[in-house]
Image 1 (cartoon, rainbow over the protein chains, first blue to last red):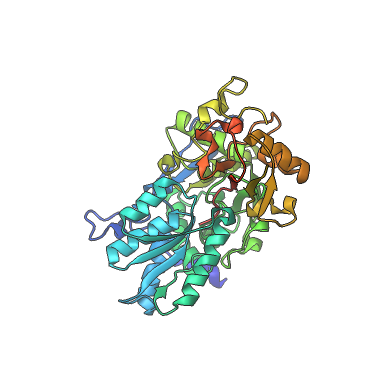
Image 2 (cartoon, rainbow over the protein chains, first blue to last red):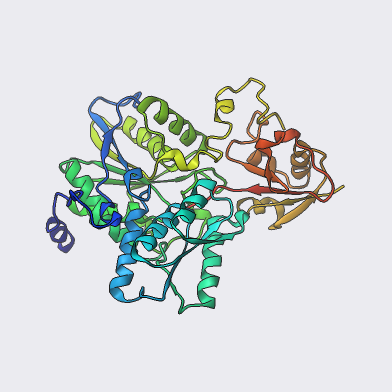
Length: 336
Length: 91
């Protein structure tokens, strides 16, 4: 029971936001849980759905947690020191978070991203002063991973690579922050934890903490239903480079999310709950609804990794009204 | 008449692993039809049951998104490059 005793030694209540912060990095974490009140058709009144709004992090996403944890760990270990450049591959949000951390701490940041990341993401990392190398968009995020490895191999002494897909400090960030926050905010009543798989850091770290607190908590991961999908930020494991931090055997269940269902959920969250979120949040919410409908009673916590403003130029929103008016001649998506 | 179509990793199982294939077309709709003739099964990945481009599928002609051109009616000519671009996964 070593794990259980470790967990009980952790504080129930996270530190919370300081009244005055010395650094924007001190405001990472402590994001709110919000009750989903309307988007719950067919759900028992004894089931609560609580969304954790990670868009409230300073860099705008859940990725602030692992990025700050990994950078601080690099500083502690000496792997990141003056003269080094922070380098990693990212689909966007981790890059934004690393760029933020580098700007605050005075370290240059270089990111490898697929060339088709949204224009909003490109502009945000540029605003933080990071340099971006674009990888072949047709190779997806695995192409960015491979190109990043090549850049590192060419100049290993120049770089500190947080290596979000393989660094155990990524899930540790969630073990030490996301998990305790959820436990405290639900007063230990959480019964189901649901999150999408990007690197696997959120589901692994948070899941481990919650399991140590209460082994009955169900840890449920959400992934795209197919290798060919439109759920930016989520990984279809069977067709991807599997992150070293991802251990499927520690999950209670995996739910496959269809792109269309996730997109529809995003639109409904906006108009019915006042929450304009990203497509990965839509996928997680559609899975949460599926689980909720199976239950008689429970407290479901679902991660919404970011808000939707950084996707306004993507296929999630471009042409969405036309898709909602199927059957009308719209000029978009005419028959093949 | 040949248009080069760049195939993303998740769809290369339809093209025997090829990253790029040549098709004829005239329009993107024609390109999709010729792709399907030469690489059966690929159209269903690009278009829904009503024959419309799936909303998450990004198709570019010489770097321009067909959503901002004429969708499936976008014209293509010899030597044009059509790219089918996947969503960005993970982290």
